[in-house]
Image (tube, rainbow, N blue to C red; front, side):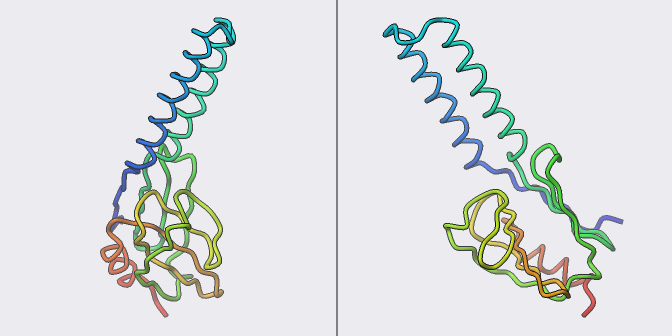
Amino acid sequence: MQTYKHTQVGKFVAVLLGMLVVYEFCMMFFLFRTGELNMQSYLAITTSTSLIFVALLALFFSLTVEVNDQVLRLFFGVGLIRKSWRLSEIKSVQVVQNKWWYGLGIHLTPIGWVYNIGGLMAVEIEMKNGKKFRVGSDEAQMLEMELKKHITT
């Protein structure tokens, strides 16, 4: 039975990708109007880069975190990128503040893997095998409380 589910929308990611699409269209249009690009090249470049931006947006527009009696699960965007951990393997959890340079998305930091879509607050999770990772959340305290209900030390 699912006991916690929260989806955080990555507003910054969406705005940034939107601005990149507008910038790219303006640049390509300018190059087309000045004669530096022909119509075929203009269409090919704008279409291919727009598809890349749309794919990135679909993959990373949100981060959903779910907790049930056995598993902590998270997935980005449409769900192609997902990860899960058994709650029985979790040693401890605590709310932390990420450094701003840890950024957004999924990446390895000196602390361990970080999964984040926006903001600096996260829940640091230490596994019984000693590995740590962080899950960014705009509801970090609620996620921490929910995980503490389920973990056994």
